[in-house]
Every structure is written in structure tokens, then in C-alpha cells.
Image (cartoon, rainbow, N blue to C red; front, side, top):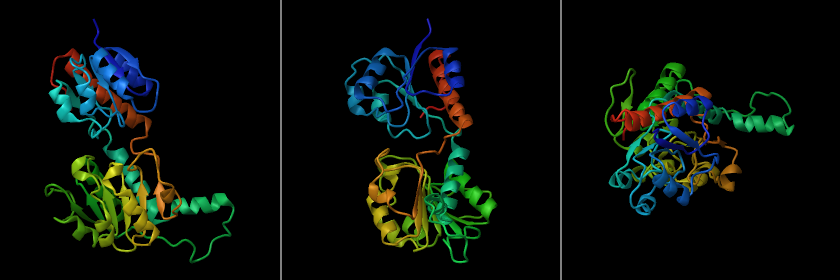
Length: 319
């Protein structure tokens, strides 16, 4: 008999078709996060679940299911801070994710935000759409020229490295970084021990760290105070890595030059004060929003499920 698997969101057809080759599959049609009842029912009724961002598998969820049938949560995404891995493991569940598949797409969105923020592209498009644009002139909407500037990477993992490579080789930017350990990189880069010290020297900060308690509000008022007035902040990691209230203050008072965000502290809620600002670019979590990328992520999650539930092997991307 085929093992029973729940896919927590609608996914590309190719992913679901591949899953159906190996499992009896139910696909949840709702695009919003799973409720507490849905998560606990999934733990009782399925052998494996493919959850994703917003499905808050926290200790209380596991505590409410005495003997879960589910043995694996194959997360659709590289970030898994919505899953309490300690509580999941204690309940006998294996956790996996989808690293690698998201790297280039997320780095591309970081560059999109960097260019849009520095060159005031969002503000410019709004001006054209409003009908208020009166034509070109030499001092119109002057922004920050990125070529030759210095980017500071917060978290030099796969995605941080991909952003740095694009900045260095594509725009001739100098690279600085803070990370848990010093890295061997294919380009010159300055390693900082202190985030504050790095923030004071760079023109753009790009945040690429995992979410979780250790990085909550890592980018805070102290960081904004250290940044140069023309500098920009780019966040493609997790929303709560940035203290959103402090960011709004820094942007509205001219403490920093601008920001580009793909994620938000209380996503999908975006404060009106942030939406009212012209010097911030706001994207709806587009980091991996390309068909090829989402398909690759889904196929990687299916491979994790198959290895564990069908082949009896350690999944390739166990956490």
C-alpha cells in the first residue's frame, strides 16, 4: 500500500505528478497557512507532510498529538524556522528542507531590490503611472550609482555568496561581510567580526541569514545608527530579522538612504507607515517565484519523502 502524503499548498503540476508516482497524495487547496487543527490532523492521518512557510509546527502542535502517524516533515523551502525542529524530533519526526534550489533565484531578487532601491525605480514608476511626470531633466530623481560601491553581506552562506558574486563580478563592487565563520571566496572580501563596524563602512547591506531566535531583530536601531546616510538595506532573509519599527524610523528621518524588502516582520501584514514611504521598495515575497525554481524545490521535497518513506534511507536534505 502506498504511503499517504499531504502537500500543504497547491504546487506546480509536475511536482504533484511526481509525488503521485510514489505516494497516495492529498493536496490542500488553500493558499493560506495551515490551522492548528489542520496541522494536528495531518500529524495523525498522514505518513508524511510537505509543509511550507507559515505552517507553524510549534511545540503545542506536537504536544496535542499523542502518537503521530507522520514520521517526516519535508519542508518546501530552505528556511524552516516555522518548524520547531527540537519538538519535532522529540515527537519522532525527521525534518528536511530544500537548500540549493533557491540560491540563484533569491540572489537575483536581492539584486532586483538593490537596483530598484538605489536607482529609485519604484518611485519613478509610480511617478509615470500617476501622470505627474513632466519629462527628463538633469537633476531628476538622482539615486545611488552601485558600480564600484561596497556591499556588506550579513550571512555569507549559499545565498549571501551568490549575492556577493553578482555584486563583485557584475558591478565591480567591493565586498565586506559578517558570518559565523571566515569564508574562502573566489574574490577579495573583507571579513568583519562586528556587524556595527561593517555597517559604518558599506554603501549597501544585504541580509541573507536564516530566521529564528538567534537572528531576531539582528538588524536594529543600532545598525541603522551606524549606517551612512546614503546607505541602503536589502532584506531577502526573514522578515523578523529586521526590527521593522526601527527601519521605519530610519527611513522616515533620513537616517539611511533607502531599503528594499521582499519579506516582512508580520507577513503578510505590512505597516501603513512603511507603505507610505517613497524610499523603500516593497515586493510580495518573490524570492523563489519562478516556475523552474518552485518546481525544483518541490521535486527536492518529494525526493526527501521518497528516500525516507519508500526507500528506507536517510533523506538527502535532513536537518
